[in-house]
Image 1 (tube, rainbow, N blue to C red):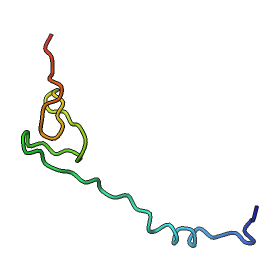
Image 2 (cartoon, rainbow, N blue to C red; image 1 turned 90 degrees about the horizontal axis):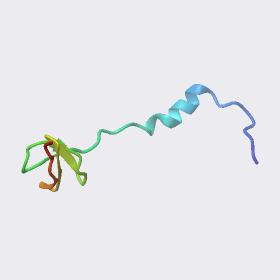
Image 3 (tube, helix red, strand yellow; image 1 turned 30 degrees about the vertical axis):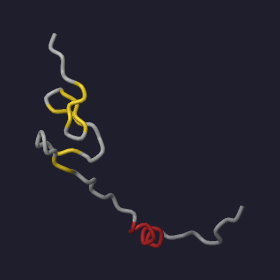
Image 4 (tube, rainbow, N blue to C red; image 1 turned 90 degrees about the vertical axis):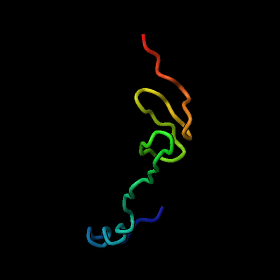
Length: 62
């Protein structure tokens, strides 16, 4: 397996890694509930589970 001939300095290594950045995830507003959530994901509002603006699981009260 090949090995580097010389040590790569920290500044040279970090210059190469400048393009790797964290990006903010996309968020959408629900038309039914008005909450902000990630698209294509189920989300909860007041204990109820919603997906695509429709209630999937309703919170039960004991």
